[in-house]
Length: 95
Image (spheres, rainbow, N blue to C red):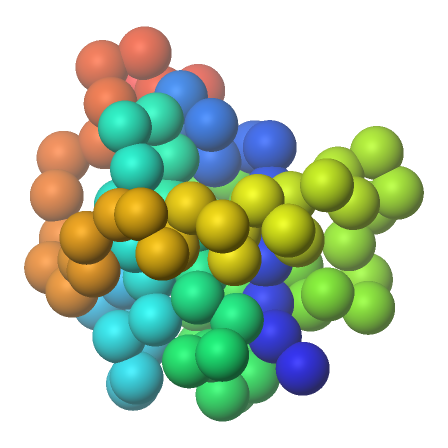
């Protein structure tokens, strides 16, 4: 089982979640973060840290964001791992 970063992260890219991840399974894209499903240990540490509530267990992923499960797997392979907190994007939803 894995967690999935969904649409609310797009354009925000808060990184509060990456600093609590014990296995470093977050990857940084241009507009959002992704979780590598084969690396995620399903610990849920990241879920309460996300200020825009963008991280879901794959079994609880809202239907309208179902495509994000495959997108996370695909993009994690193309992006660099991120382990440190960074400033969110300028147009983030809470700034």
